[in-house]
Structure formats: structure tokens, C-alpha cells
Image (cartoon, rainbow, N blue to C red; front, top):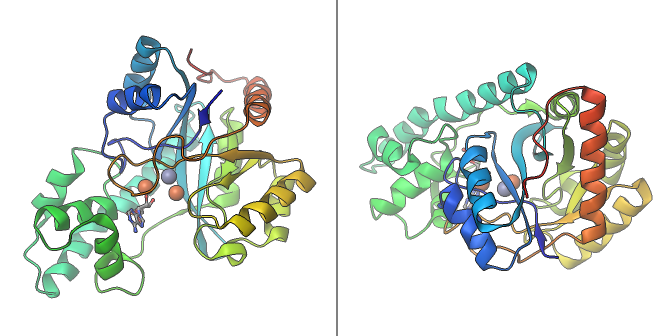
Length: 291
Ligand code: AMP
Ligand code: FE
Ligand code: FE
Ligand code: ZN
């Protein structure tokens, strides 16, 4: 069993359609694919159809942009009821915060002497609701300003660079509660991806475990081997599920190929069992695994 629980489509900042992603996952030999676009369930329907067609199990989820202890934290939500009104409202707020700052980013780029306008970004965003810095980066690539997304972030879009503009992110603890109430389960995406253990200290992880966190994404390309080891130990101590995933973005991120990290079958079974228990407690109509 090969299980990859964290991937993106063009509904957020991946470069593949849902159909392309599902077919690519099948071709890469995956048995289970987790679809986790940033802050949107837009690709769920086409992905479900494609998964049934090609014969692959599909776990529908999302990666929610939150903030905790002054830092950005990405929260993976698996199998939530996407129609639960508080969840819908929170996602709306995040998406609005992300896209409403794009004009300010474009203005700063113009002030830096770059000939870019909003239409360039809109073209790069393919109509996604999750329009953000990755699409500004794509516009800069198509204008020939930078060779790739990473360079665009490094030179212009990261904090401290000339075109960085802050945005709204949802409070982590409140968002976890909303996801759980909606019948889903929560996993911290790449918890030590940015600054190693300083990103989120072990005692903060323990506190989140007490609030119903289900798992930690341990095997991720942004984690160093020593951090993976330490996170695995923390997960074991706290009885958290350990996941491993590619965080595939199509051509949008290098070195994140489908299946480059995977989740162990026993950990996957635990995660799904926890999701089923959460769904039962919520009394809501939740999506369930396709296939
Ligand atoms: P935003 O939500 O508009 O602030 O954009 C954040 C998203 O940009 C993240 O979720 C990443 O997927 C993507 N991103 C951040 N840094 C990079 C990078 N260096 N290269 C490619 N994508 C990136
Ligand atoms: Fe992304
Ligand atoms: Fe992320
Ligand atoms: Zn991701």
C-alpha cells in the first residue's frame, strides 16, 4: 500500500487539474491519494469522479492557513463536512484575505519597476478562489522576470522582501475546533518546516494534542532527518498519528514528487478510524473515503 495524503491542484496553487492529479497519482503507483488544496474543497467533485474512474482511494481534505503563537501554521483537515457553516465562513475569510492583498502586492512590484498588472495574475490563477502569492510568482515567471516560483518568493514575495504583504490567517485552536465539529480530523502539516523545532515547540504540540489534534505530518521534504526522528518520538508519546506526504504541487514546487514520502498503512487506518469517530460524534453528513 502506497499512501500519499497531501497534494494540491489548480484549485489552489498546484499546476494540475483534479483529473490530471488523480491520473498522475495512479501512474505513480499510489493506492491512496489525499487531496488537500489550500482553504478550498473546490476540486473534490472532479477528483472523486476521476478516482472512481481510475480506481484509486481518495481522501478528501484541505490545508487551512492558520496562525498560532505568532507564526503561520498549516492545518490539514481530512474528511470534514465542507458545508458546515462555521467552516465555510472561516475558509471564505481566509480566501478573501489572500486575494484581497494581491492588488497591494502588484502595486509594490510596480513600485520596484516591474511591468506587471492584476490581469497578469488573474491569468496565472486560472480562476481559483485561492489566488495568492504563488500565482503572482507564476505571473512573474511568464513575464520573464524570474525563472521559477522559488526565485519569485526569494526575491520579491517572502517576508522582508519588497513585495511582501501580510494577510489574514485563522486562529489555529478555533479552526481545529471547527474542523472537529464538522466531523473531520486534523493533522499539523510540516510542523517544523520553516524553523525546525522553533516553529512549534513540543509543549505547544502537546497542548494541541489535548485539544483533539489527531496527527503530525512527520515525513515531509521540508523536515530534516533529525527533526523527523524527534517528531516521530513526540507523536508516539502523545499517541498522535504519524503521516508522510509529498505536498505535491505539480510543477509548482520542485522535489515534491507524488509518493516521495508516504504514510504507513497502520497509521492511515488509525487516521480513518478517528475520522469515522469524529463524523459519528458530529452527527453530520461527512464525505468518507472514495473507492
Ligand atoms: P499565500 O497564501 O498567498 O501567502 O501563499 C502561500 C503559499 O505559497 C504556500 O502555501 C506555498 O504553497 C506557496 N509557497 C511558499 N513559498 C514558496 C516557494 N519558495 N516556492 C513555491 N511555492 C511557495
Ligand atoms: Fe501551496
Ligand atoms: Fe503547507
Ligand atoms: Zn501543502
